[in-house]
Amino acid sequence: MTSPDPEPTRTPGLEPGGQVSPGETPPAEGGTFGTHPDPPELRKGWGAMPLIVIMVLVVLVVLVVIGLIAMAIAL
Image (cartoon, rainbow, N blue to C red):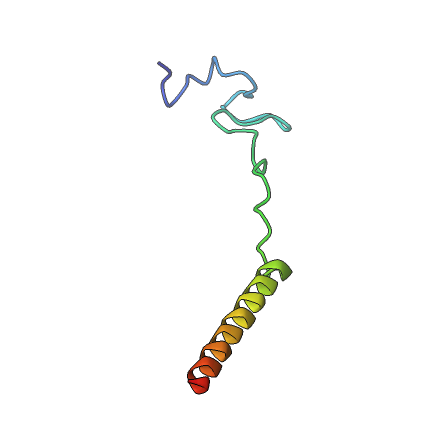
């Protein structure tokens, strides 16, 4: 198990006094900042296909209703 405060005399990359040398990564710091993937782009609305399917279904329902009304009048 490692201690949270390592002994400065055994930590590599430190100058006398415990300071970090220029260009060195400080101890306990990750070098992976900014490696997360880009978020997916948001969709901007309905595609063409779902709108066409909805319009076809609405037209079919309207035609069925018109046919039922015509049958009721013909009685």
